[in-house]
Length: 266
Image 1 (cartoon, rainbow, N blue to C red):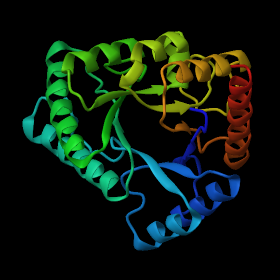
Image 2 (image 1 turned 180 degrees about the vertical axis):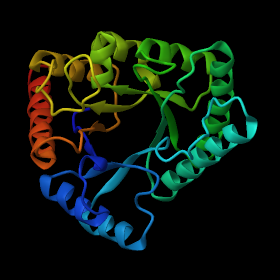
Image 3 (image 1 turned 90 degrees about the vertical axis):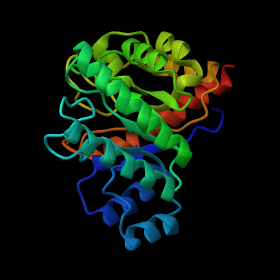
Image 4 (image 1 turned 90 degrees about the horizontal axis):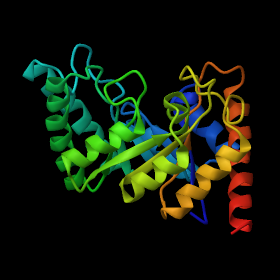
């Protein structure tokens, strides 16, 4: 990770898609995370190309039709969710994104987990055909609330194209050790989200504005180095922040300085 690719989840900004693309470019980003509805128009695609913005990841769970879910007990509603994520994966392939991710269901019961497993296996097949990595984001309050449980689920599915999306804010809520999680994930780590919070709620604050310390940030980057992580690290900040543009700029600068310190101290 010597030349760290820093991405930005563009939903941190509330302007039109084209205005948002101009803003993230002005801040200094070269890579972006998008939702399935983004980068659909010719105008937005051409602008991204003009600005040199590459899509690194798509959040395929965004916009799943109301009433449907990957673990839904009704097959038709489960299929609606699968179709939505499949289309998002195809969109990722069309715009050369490397990774698509989904979140867990809300039902932690054995039957729901089994339905989710079968949906995920199908989607991992679809993603493999599209040459896109499929990742699952561990998510407090949902069926896979910790990174450890998400990794165990991924290993149970046992698919070559199924990975973990690591989220620093979620790790702070679950109380897991970042370096241990990253080491345990190893080559099953497909993507990284950075954000901060108070250790209780998923607030998506700017880095070091919550319980994250400079030492934790450095340790996380060192752990990513240790497993040979080559993907992007993406800032997922909240549009409800007082000044999201400044928060993105400050957090990006923090990551660059932290990465430099890690590299210089090798």
